[in-house]
Image (cartoon, rainbow, N blue to C red; front, side):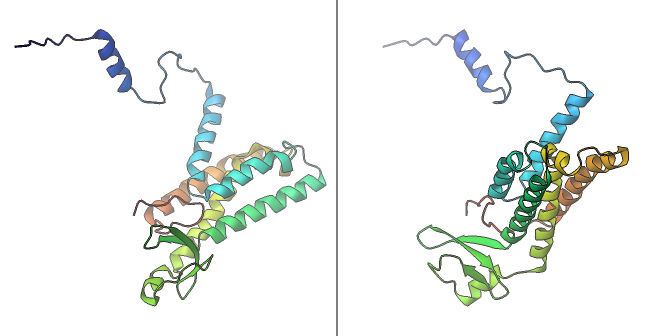
Amino acid sequence: MDIKLDFDDPNKNKHKDEEELPLLRNTEVPEAERNLVQKAISQTFESTAHLANLLPTGTVLAFQLLSPIFTNLGNCDSAAKTMTSFLVAICAASCFLLCFTDSFRDSKGNICYGFATFRGLWIIDGSTTLPPELAAKYSIRFIDFMHAVMSVMVFAAVALFDPNVVNCFFPTPDNETQEILTALPVGIGVFCSMLFVVFPTHRHGIGFPLSTN
């Protein structure tokens, strides 16, 4: 008869303890010491990230990519200011329109996207059609307009968090303007985040995450 003895391996226990630590924590790196200004900047970046989750991913990425180019890193002349205005307007319009998109899976599991209408859902590629009773579930409702307006407001807050855009339109703000530019996006973010929690959207449109079912 074979007798098998198990001994505790200290290296095994060490690896087990390391696996239980949070993935984003590095114990080898000392904790960063931040002053008040650095904490405020860090909090601003975190707020921008949380607000961006309420917007279409592609629109936010396009804005963050093109903003430094259009604004010339915040050093705007008349042409750069005009292009930046068009960029903000187009991205805001995209956030508004994409709130009226939705998606569903067909019998083969393929994802189909469409625009919500008052009669149902208009499939963009025309690959399939929904039965009238099923299409009625995707029709436009008042809450869709509410989400669209809130998405535009959230995008405005994200744009105001961008230092390049702020320096482009307000190169030398006075104290009152600076206070407004600091407090307004935070207020918009808190207000719209509360409304999104109280009145959540059940749509899974273009640029928004899809559900498992």
